[in-house]
Length: 208
Image (cartoon, rainbow, N blue to C red; front, side):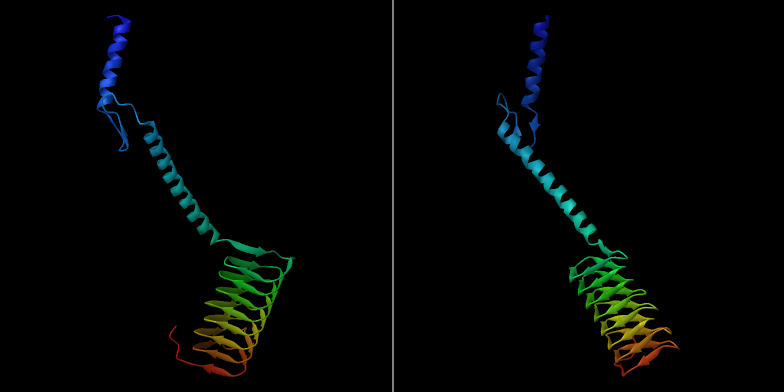
């Protein structure tokens, strides 16, 4: 068989195979019909668009998850002045002058002059001049001092509070704590050595 005839035979066989071969759900080769390049291109573009949307959605979810874990840090020997409003966590080692509204956790080992509103707070060897409102848990360690009213769901105090303290749930005052102001709580635990100066009101029996 000549080379030309052999090539012609192979071409004919290939054409016969393509007649019965489906190409996706949107385009196929039937008989001697030509491929619908426009439909094929549209299908490819739609598939790529869908993949890009899924990829972008995944990236946005990862970014949102990462964002929720971010922490704004004010380093030691740094002083900032002005109000701060954020949904992220905050850690203050330096000095902050202004009101703070924090949707996350707040850790202070420096000093703050202003009112504080947050989800959870840990006051470590810090000085606060202003009121504190905590949605859940407030911890004041030994050596810390709060000059202002305190309002929280729960408190663990080993430091000093000069102001009224209102706790919706459980209050724990360690031996190193010193409170000067009225205390209102639903559950009270006081260690021997703690100093409480002011009116005390326990509203209900301890369930925690």
